[in-house]
Structures are given as C-alpha cells and as structure tokens.
Image 1 (cartoon, rainbow, N blue to C red):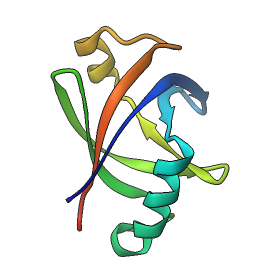
Image 2 (cartoon, rainbow, N blue to C red):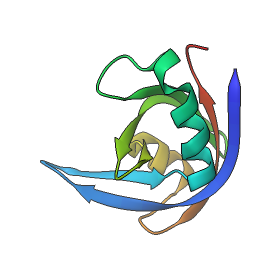
Image 3 (tube, one colour):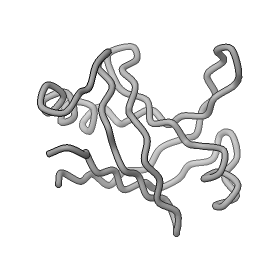
Length: 97
C-alpha cells in the first residue's frame, strides 16, 4: 500500500451544500497522479484511506485545479474537533494497489 504523511489546512468548497476538504500538497498530488490510472474508478477519483489523530476514514480524492482534494467528513471533524481553517496532519493510503 502506498502511504503519504503531510499537513494541510481544512478548506470549504461550496457546491449544493458546503463540504470540507484538504488540498493535497503538490508533491503528494504529483505522486498520486502517477498512480491514478491503476486505481481510479472513473472521473479521475482515487479511492483512499485517511487517518488524522485517532480517526480513520475511507473516501476518494477528487481532482481539482491540477491537484487533488481530500474530503474531510463531518464525523471526522466532530471526532477530532477540527474546524474550518485548522491545519491537521494526515496519513493517506491509496487503496487498490
């Protein structure tokens, strides 16, 4: 399993409802892009497992503006007391490899 450790800031993206994400650092996005063909299941989304603090969750990275966004689910934010604009550490594992 391919794994990355990085820090990032929680941002909000407004679609039909507000969603919270972290933008992957450029070096992580570059590595993920190299693996994308092997694991994407359509529309360029990449299945991942993420860990912050004591919380682990599964989700998918979304391609956006030449990089990737990691969704930070409401349950994760509540469990770890994460707010908009907070900087958090994440371990990211690409699933399907």
